[in-house]
Length: 365
Image (cartoon, rainbow, N blue to C red; front, side, top):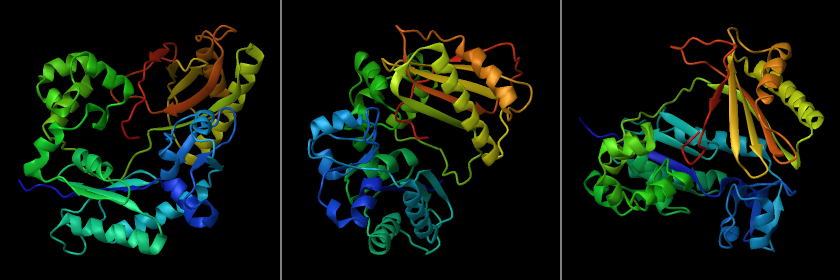
């Protein structure tokens, strides 16, 4: 069977680069895109800011301590979406097999492509060149025979880089990677791997599939394959929406029942509006609560009929909230709600809530 030709395109500091492109005064300056407030979070940092240790998902307060000269720019997400659409149009000139991961990155399967190119690297160079010429932005590209390796390759020579991982060099390349560089390994998983002696791809390759499954569940089998350069996932062009949700981080932690109930009510109203706009049918409601100490829990409950109306969602949300210990000793900083599809093979009882334990790390959304 012939090997696939997969490209991963990843824009360099996308939001920050768009702001620097559109405002000459920001060029060469350390900037962070995001909300400048007590609960603000960095969406994207320019490379000038990254030299100080500023990075995405960092609190804005910490970012300003690390870089006192940091310039904070409010996000213009409608602009980023327009630029992302233009990038997508460039990529679609080469293949229709495009899997967007977010506004600023995507996989392309160019095994068969529109320009008849034999080498995937030639297509990657053309896409990078056109993004630079037409949009005045830079992108990094990774090329390999599967998504796992293409993703790692695109990170390898950032910014404005290009890297190809050939099949005959893949195992050596994987072996020297730090385990933190593996797709799907976040901080918590890395710590767990370190505890059992896994620090590099070579260490991971020494572990049996069963040993990894015992420690990491289903992801253990994925890690086993990744260590051997195996990833059969196709480039998926169409996604079925799995959920609709919204969440709010509060300016100050809250715990009083009246304040929490008011925030829950407003979150329900926003969720209902999003469900209506998305024309979405889901039967499982999930409540997400993040406490002041960043501990996070979820509670879920399913209904026999699609959840669309406030009168159906609000009572369920209140019932889920009653299961959470919110008090002066346990104030909360974030409240979220989402509606999702139930598993097709399962029957649900609206009287049986289920607690979900989710670990949010680096796996793509």
